[in-house]
Amino acid sequence: MLRWFGNDLNWIVAGLVAAALVAGLSILGGVPFLIAVIIGGLVFAGLVFLLTPRQLFDGVDEKTIGKGQLAYARDLLIEAAAPRQQLELAAEAIDDPEVRLRARHLAEISADVVGKVEANPASATAVRRFLSYYLPRAAEIADGYRLLEQKRNPDTQRLTEINAVMIKLEDAFVHYADGLVDAELGTLDVDLKLIQASLKEDLGR
Image 1 (cartoon, rainbow, N blue to C red):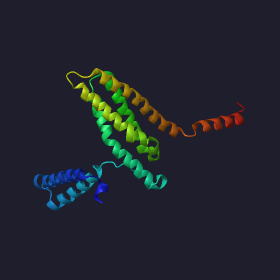
Image 2 (image 1 turned 90 degrees about the horizontal axis):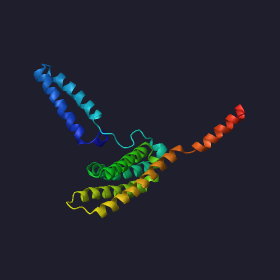
Image 3 (image 1 turned 45 degrees about the horizontal axis):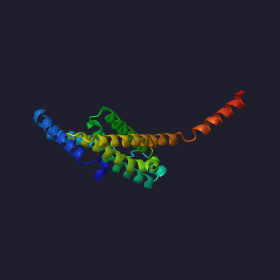
Image 4 (image 1 turned 180 degrees about the vertical axis):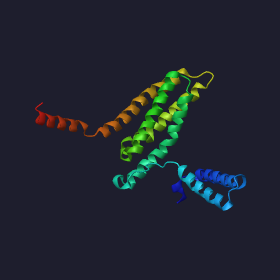
């Protein structure tokens, strides 16, 4: 049940702050010890709640999505967390400005896709291959480029080959990100045609 209120860190921080507050109020402030303990307890409870990290899909109605779909989306995002971080770190450490910019773009797109899945867990299926395959491979390749750059005599041919693959990965990333947007648009084209037909019928133009 305690896991509902975050990890151990928020409890530890809240406990330390509350203990310091009780000591400060009772010793330095001259507040009666019992009153100080009550105040410390209230502060402790408030901090535990405030410091609780946000959980995936907070506020999402399981009845509308389904527990299975939520669990599936959650597993995908949890597995994608490590390669996302690896990609972001590699992007900041790459020396070549063009490749660094490309790696940053890949990291930005991955963050965008993850954000869309967090907002709409039902979309996880559409980007399963992106999260479970393309993202981890992109992270490995970007990190490999970073490591190759550190050699005193880096293999320029290998660096060029990696950059070429990253260009193709960039296209794949854009494809999946735009696919989620297309899915969100849904029946926009149909709605536009219906509205235009209604306007023509009502206004004659």
